[in-house]
Image 1 (cartoon, rainbow, N blue to C red):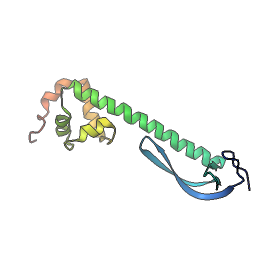
Image 2 (cartoon, rainbow, N blue to C red):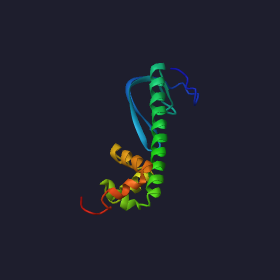
Image 3 (tube, rainbow, N blue to C red):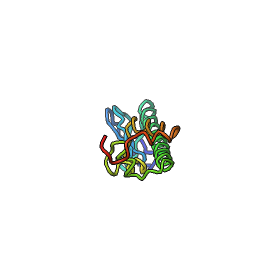
Image 4 (cartoon, one colour):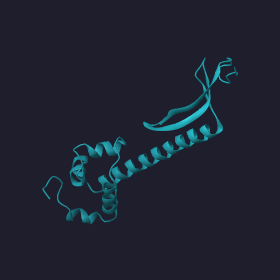
Length: 139
């Protein structure tokens, strides 16, 4: 058996065809068909070159996705405040549930592209808010 670089035990065993999950900031991504070595002593995993590249790329993609989520939640909060809307009013205006904007601004839910597009339009043309039905009124 090979020696583990992490714990020094001669306990590395070959594995192949496994699926492992990468996690970052509450986001996950499954990476399939991984192969490499696993230490029976400490659990350390050493991927083959292809698996290491794919596992790292999946992690990098999650970091990028989290950055976009954080940028988007800041943008949503900024525009809503600029328009003078409460979270509840903004939710009613865009057709979301009563807590939709709270979840958007916390990064716990992803708004539909139509919501983002409407907010970006209103950010550039806040006067158009007067042309929309008042939050909570029937359309």
